[in-house]
Length: 155
Length: 153
Picture 1 (cartoon, rainbow over the protein chains, first blue to last red):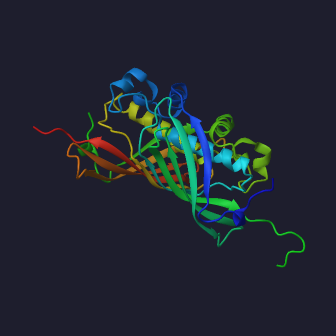
Picture 2: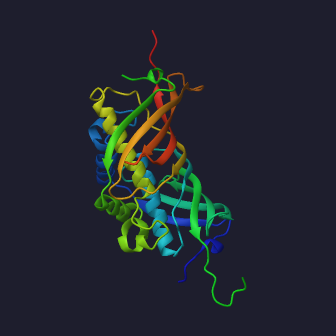
Picture 3: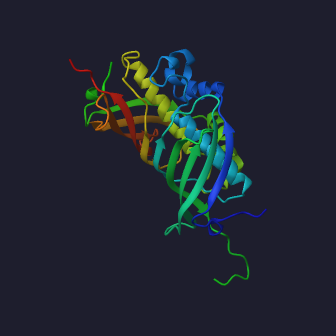
């Protein structure tokens, strides 16, 4: 399969990012390293917390979204150049052990960069759990490489 | 217990000292963001970044660790009446984070506003900057937290 560049991405496209289960061990492992708060790391303390049980760190949820997206980029051979940031992120529903998350990315806008040889794609990524509740929504811009000119192309 | 009313608008804090290692950058990349410039030193050299860089989400995670540690250092777990975070806005990865960088954090409270619909709680907005050892800002964002209001009576 050939590389997909900025020129190959169309506004309105929806990318199915696939799904992935989240287990308690991974929630605790991520949080122990990066977000050691009791409702992320300690099942008993989490029971007694506002959340009523163990929940994933919001940053862990973002990392899982990235995992789904990065795997899609790899599978589809997309010429991703990373992202300058994220305009908004909303953690809407807690992610809990046993959840199966399913993601999709919608292409909202596309424009060539004025200063660099790349294209800027505005995307909305939504992730749902097995009850079809939206757990996180992210909006932002991502950078993609332009299709290289080949010999014989008119300049 | 720290309530919504205890956040002083304009108050700033500085904290954190996080040494970024190549091993950790690659481990996070392999697990969550397997783009070549996060996991493969050689491929990263040929990328627009000129070398291995941390996933932006890894930088966010390292920020969170520094924030949790600072919380624990101050008052050894004075409990915050935290109801979690609804999210963040205007996250910018301004400069790549590279192995060997040492990160630290500065924050400023932007607002602490009672909820209109739920009288017992409110939302705090906070500006966050993460800098490297050269005092260059590598990440900024506006984050939010929901907190209980101080009980009256």
